[in-house]
Image 1 (cartoon, rainbow, N blue to C red):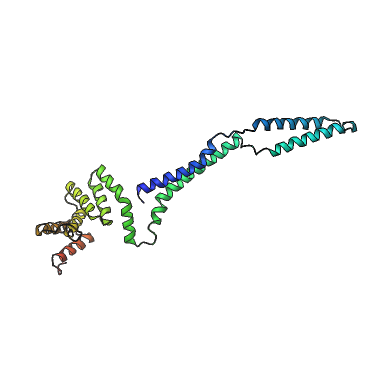
Image 2: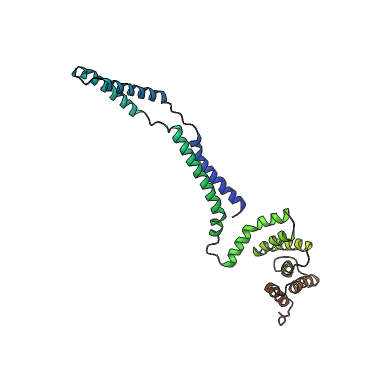
Length: 248
């Protein structure tokens, strides 16, 4: 997954979470707060009067009148819309939303760096999976080599490009690496092989002198690293190209 797609995914997640959390961070106003407060005060006053009445027949009429008033007040309270959450409850909800927001960001980032790259490789064989990995790493390795030129950064860039079959880019990287240090078996043999196959890759025809130089690079790499299998493999391939099948 490219850096641009990762950034786009992150922006989409942040935008979706902002839609959820921002309303919780805004203070809620109750337009009926005064009316609700007055009714509650009236209810409490009526309850207090009812509790204070003597339990005598003479007070039955007064008690009935107070109970009717209290019933009307309760009905008016029931007809009001539900009150918004209190500041305390809103604070807890906002805190929970912030925790959820942070967890979602961390989960998205973790999935982007772990699950998503692995998911892209499902159903691929080892060679295809290596190419996908190289494609994912190639832009970053190229940028690193251009920002901090060194044998290590150039070779990492060249290896990723070689695995991705971006051979022109691999040739550039290996050439720059060999300018810094000439005695490197890996870049020598791969650069020589790429030069030897330049025409097959759509490049200009190789002259006899260029072909000899490419073979010399591969042979030198085999001498520098005689214990590395790739050295002998590519040397054998070069010998075949020059018609020396028995030596190959």
